[in-house]
Image 1 (cartoon, rainbow, N blue to C red):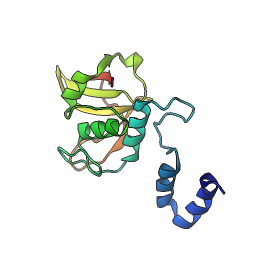
Image 2: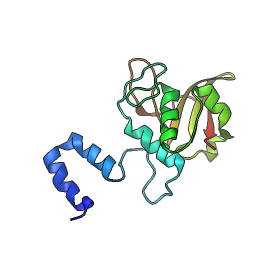
Image 3: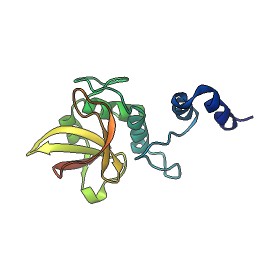
Image 4: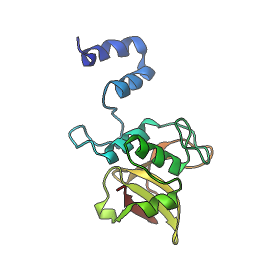
Length: 157
């Protein structure tokens, strides 16, 4: 019996909460905003999957994981797990990415929120105008619609 054939019986015995863990360990994790299995497994796709797997992790200023994150800590952690290095802050990350237009954005690209010329927040683009991000104190990592037009996009090199 292959591992894939055992998953249904494991889910029955383990319960729904453990089913996500089994799915994540056993193969692909099905989460809204992720690329399909048919797409190439790029570092951007892997980073997006890592960020999605942190859904519900609490925000903590300055935290870089693995169980608590601030916004740039989540993007740095996710890309590190995908084999790419990013600097620590949102502004530093913006400066290290290849800047792209909104029409060129793809899943896994970084979305930088700015006020004037200052970058103050970052998330990972999940498609359909949504990002995975760690918003603020008292909140958790979540999938959310982009709420402003004051954003820039960057592709991790």
